Length: 389
Image: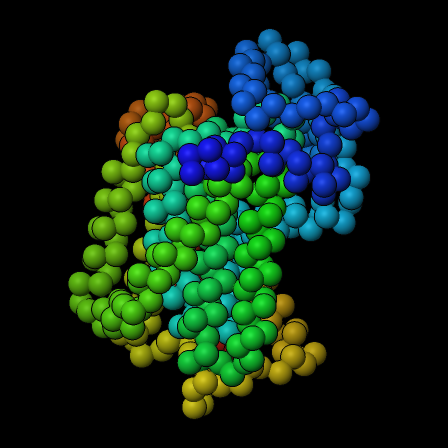
């Protein structure tokens, strides 16, 4: 059993998958070079930084930039498909596409989704920093993402989020919207599978990371599913709900496990917890005001007909909503950093200050709590004023 786990966690499987999909390191593109799963990560004095142009990487040593291509793409279709699939687990997707479920489909589904996404991502991020298992180490594995390479690997939170989002919507939607369950199941399986495979293609996770991510997410869904209705009632009707959401999630942000080196996991986790807190408070406020923006008619309601007018209104809602969220994010982030820098007497040009717990946690939590509040409370009311609902 242990040998199997070591094999699944090795870099060789990842490298083989990349080659099968047409992704080759430049030095390996025209030569058959054996892959060593146990090859240690090179410890370089320089640093790697991503170059968007031509999808290459640039190596900088001692202040001198000497760029050279690091990989060759032989299957452009799969390359684009997996990069787009990987993007489904990044912030740009969470802050743009997920809120559309609230704006254009059903706030009930968005609330369920945000709740499960918050729980699953917190568990996954903490497990990474407790288990401390490395990402693929072989120098023959092409790394297409560098921002999170300093993080630990197991479990894959992309796989966890994709599984949680797809199947939370699938399990919650039948009571709200009329659709063919088999079609929904096929879509959920397809989307979650693409995201999982994209983590292998980008070289960021081993097969074991991905399998564990899916299984852990499925276990959380299985254990919590019987209590979803109870959680809904407490979240929407209890007087202590907003206080509990803010204090608990802020406490979890501050008590996130410390590492010997800086990693983006604490900041990303605080972002998720802040967004979850803001949305939770916002849904409670809407319930108290008696304006929840849920579909009209007897549930489950038919799926909206996709007409030219509906498409135009949906596009307008998307544009207005995204501008509102990104604007809120930028304004609150700037103001909160100014206040914290002044409070702790830190220079504004000191970029490393953002990595300190006493600055990173409050500024990210406040910023994304505000984003969650705007998403759940204000955006739909703006749509009413503009005649977009």
